[in-house]
Each structure stands twice: as C-alpha cells, then as structure tokens.
Amino acid sequence: MSSFIGQFKYTIDTKGRINIPAKFRKAISPEANETFVITRGMDDCIWAYPLDEWSKFEEKLRQLSTNQKDHRLYIRMATSYASESRLDKQGRIAIPQYLIDLVKIEKEILITGSLDKLEIWNPNTYEEHMKEYEQSYEILAEKIDKNRNLT
Amino acid sequence: MSSFIGQFKYTIDTKGRINIPAKFRKAISPEANETFVITRGMDDCIWAYPLDEWSKFEEKLRQLSTNQKDHRLYIRMATSYASESRLDKQGRIAIPQYLIDLVKIEKEILITGSLDKLEIWNPNTYEEHMKEYEQSYEILAEKIDKNRNLT
DNA sequence: TATTATTTACCCACTTTTACCCACTTTTAA
DNA sequence: TTAAAAGTGGGTAAAAGTGGGTAAATAATA
Image 1 (cartoon, each protein chain N blue to C red):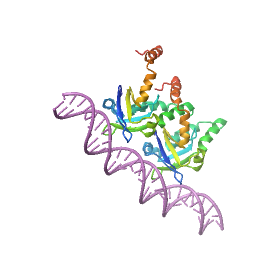
Image 2: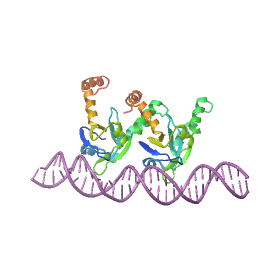
Image 3: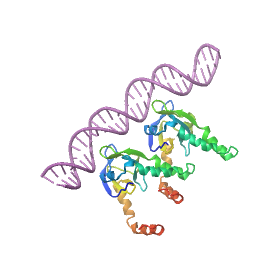
Image 4: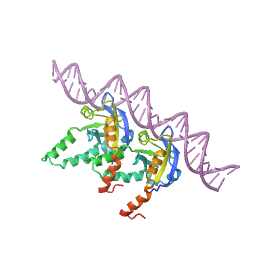
C-alpha cells in the first residue's frame, strides 16, 4: 500500500512531462509497475493514482449501473479524463494536454501527497483553495468527529 | 476483462472509418476476436463494445421478457441499431451511416474509454455535455457516496 | 444466369506523434 | 569540496494515425 504525504514544486516541460518526487517514487508499491493513472480530480486539480490504487477505485466504479444517469455521468467524469502513464527513466510521467487545459496549468506545478494518490495543482489554484478554507480546519475536524471517531 | 480509459481525437475518413486508439487495441481481450459491436449509446453518443463484452450485455437482455412493453422497447433500442465491425489491418473500424447521422458526427470525432466499452462522440456534443455537468462531479460523488461506499 | 455496378476489405505509403535515450544542470548529503 | 542523486531539456528511432489505390465480395439489373 502506497502512502504519499508532502508537497513539491516542479515545472512542466514543453512535452507535457512532470517529475514525480523521488520520495514518492520510493513509496510506490511494486504492484503499481511504475505506472500511474492520471485523471480529473476534485476541486480543480489532477489526481494521479499508482496503478494498483486505481484498480481498487475502478472496481468500485464497475459496481455502479450504466442505466442510472447519475452513475453514468460519474463514471464518465472519472474514466474519460483518465490516462495511463509509465515513469520514464528519469522518473517523469506525461500529462495529457486536456488535463493541463482543464485545471489551467502553465509552467509551474505543485504536487501534493494525499495518502493513496497524488494531487497535481496549479500553485495559484492551490493557494487560493487553501486560503478559502483556511479557517475551516478546526471546524471540519469537529464536524467529522461528530460522525466518525477520527482521533 | 477489457478496461478502457482516456480520450482521443480522430477524424472519420470519406469511407466512414475511424481509428481505434492503439492503447485500446492492446486492452481488448483475445476473445473479442478484434471485433466490436457498435450501437446507439446514451446521452447522444455511440457505444462500441468488444465482442466478448457485448455478449455479456446480450445475455442480460435475453433475461428480459418480450411480453412486457418496456422490456420489448428497451431490447429493440439496444439491438436494432447494433452493427458488428472488425478491425482492419490499420486498426480502424467502420461506423454505419445511420449512427453517424444519429449522433451528428461530421469530420472530427472523440473516442473515450468507459471501462468495458468505448464511447464515440461528436467533440462538440461531448464538450457541451461535460460543461453542463461540470459542477456536478463533486455533487454526484457525494450523492453516490451516501448510498454506497465509493472512495 | 450472366454481366455490370457498388460496396467492402485489404494493402501500401506518407505524415505525425510518442517513447526512449543521452546529456547537462542543480541540489543534496557526506 | 566533492560525489551522488535529483531534476530538466532535447534529439531520434519507432509507433501510431491518415489517405487513397486496387482487388475481392456483394448486390443489382438485364
């Protein structure tokens, strides 16, 4: 089981490649076969799943019903933006142009670890996002704690 | 079991042929015999099932009852538009004219992976469709998550 | 049924894109 | 201070995608 934490700044090159932090590369489980599935994330970022983690997610998607519109749309959101990409010899993966456009990435990117997957942000978007919910950390914690037992 | 993800832009040529993404061709199981069943999809796109996946779907259709009008109509929708097509040496399939007309495809097409099947779109239709439900990804996820345990 | 017309499938060739490899620069750590 | 590791950039061969000619198969017509 992979476990990613932390944040790292990189640049995306003219060929659409981005570096994966060395720390993360070391944390990927062998079952992932050095492969990521990159797709649209939530809150305007890109999600990158190691292949083994993606498979688990996909398994859940397959249990949904194509006959229900909500399910169909959800599956479409998750799969049609997805792209498989293997680490090259330098430890980089290729990001498809449509995802770069979707989350408005230019030259600078921010990669964050989020337990089972990575998030790829436009650094400005990330900053605004965190600023917007800055005050809510404590509030969220309490809210979640009411339902589940977190700490 | 095939698993298709991602989106790819192609053109349909004067002979009505479209390319199948190389990545998808590699993902087709041998049982499909390089053959697709192409039929009318939902939300204004065409669905293309590898033959083995179509067989599974067909099996489900057979369990419905011709004596019930709803079932009868549903079976008719799913089957009467269907057409079998084999990959040519270049990895292309032929799309029947009535389906091209149905979803208003012109020169440009967009092929997306949707786990067990492919979706073939007019790129404009896809864009409008995704824009319409753009804000809903997060909402859908929460909605689905309330019933099932998705993430 | 024979002949012609039309469609389909196969093959070849050209263009574009991708993946792989190598090399340089910068950062980290001893 | 130096060696190793990490990160960045770019050339090139191989793969993927596109277009079109021709033969085979099918359909249409006399």
